[in-house]
Image (tube, rainbow, N blue to C red; front, side, top):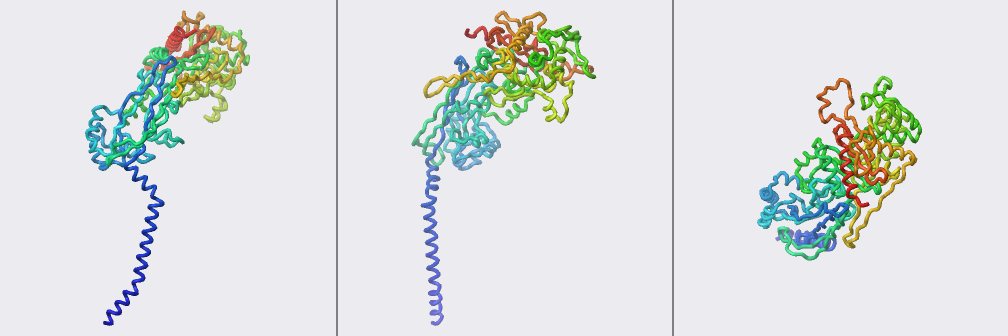
Length: 605
């Protein structure tokens, strides 16, 4: 009996602790419930709703691209993409295996795409395969209930109507990269969206791509849409009109043919790019689809570098085209008299080195005018010695060489105009006077782009008036239907006397139209052409080089030609560079003639 009383007292003694535990537990549960309901309620409601209601982006139709005459160059065609919503995948391994069999993509590649994708918001689609065919769409839709988290997106795919023509100028599209997403400060793009990756497609991407829309949909347990609640429709992108004339573009591309190189044609009155060709081209229709890793690596590792826009990224010694610069500096600085004759016997001994002229027998006695007409190296060797490398660099820079032209295309290169200070800084070496002779004829360290050379000859034709080149003629506003045209942009006038330009233009006219001119073969019946030939060495000529080496195309000289026409009233300027083409007079100059004549036959007076 005493034991029972003691047990009862023991229980009664513990009872307050039990009460306290229950009360504390109750309050803990009450606080937790309050926290979940009041503090985190909105969050969990959003998660719950997202399993039923989702806001999905709608990609806008991209603006069209036309040439200056209204010919359609790039438009949109219907296409289907296969994507995964990772949050909806019920059995990832099984789903991947089934999809792999349906659309012909390996399980490994699918897993790599999923792993590489870094989504920035929930339920963002991970694109597995672009441009799937009708048969693949039918297979996916037929097995829809067995493939939760798998969706077919109906989209508009970019198509370029003229194949790979003007590929470098137009550019191409592909899915936005994570790096591009990280650099966007607004909500006009989202994961999976297609954006411009090169050419005008990239430069004018914001104008072309429009504004995405959004739709609120109800989804079932498999993540498939069952009902549309609300839709905010996308805004179509604006159309752009390029400055190029597609007929002239075709002439340029056909004239360049299978050769590697570049052609640039410019309207001297405005800076408009009338044609821009870079060979070898690439298939931008292919790149605007999903390119597999193997094909992409083959493209970027191709030794012919087809992705390189040689017109603005190709760096070439200008060869004798640079004599325009040397001549301008000589006239301006009066280091040689205009009528001062220099004797050319086929070369010049300078120090321990003999500098050859391109004409083995020499040109005899020549002054400035005939030195340009016949492209006498010896004359310009002596002119270069009198000027010094810095004296030539001064006028090269004034005329726009050695720096980007400012064209509205991505990744333009600036080239190089050497000076004494540049060599000391870049090479840690003093300038050698013998190097000055090579610079005077556009060799040594001098590097320019075909775009720069086109603007050089355009500036000379305009007696020093400089334009910023542009590739877009105007933009058509989709809301108003109005076409806004970009006006010419004059960037100043070169500090060179008008008299100097008249002397240069007379000599450049003589290159084509006078007896003994290096480009006499391109004389035209349509208009008087002025120009300058150039042949740029790829390797230094040495006495003991084997013939079989010199005969290989990769060791042949680059062929160059710059021209403008008509001489009395310039309307067009052209630069041509043919890699390893040989002589500028016989290879590059005929290409320029075809372009000039093709343009002047059709240009409005």
